[in-house]
Amino acid sequence: MSRKFKVVPVMYAASGSAYTLKLQNTEALAGLLSDGWSVMRTDVLPGLGGKGEYKVEPNTCYEPSFPPTIVYILEKESE
Image (cartoon, rainbow, N blue to C red; front, side, top):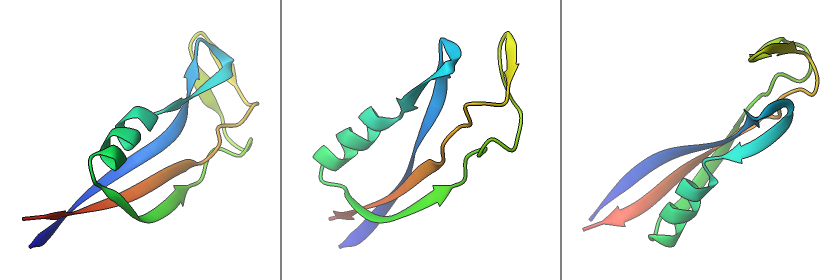
């Protein structure tokens, strides 16, 4: 038997306006977990923390800051 690995980032993205954030990629993570994948490890990529500038057309915004991205490393036994 061997193991397969996948990396699945779950992050927030602007949705409609600079002040509306929507969690992205949760459906992909849920589908993989339902298909027998398991979480081997998680890592966090830092968000902007209010210290940077990001652009959401047509505006440039400083607050609210984007939260961190959570990265899931999944594994599955394969035959």
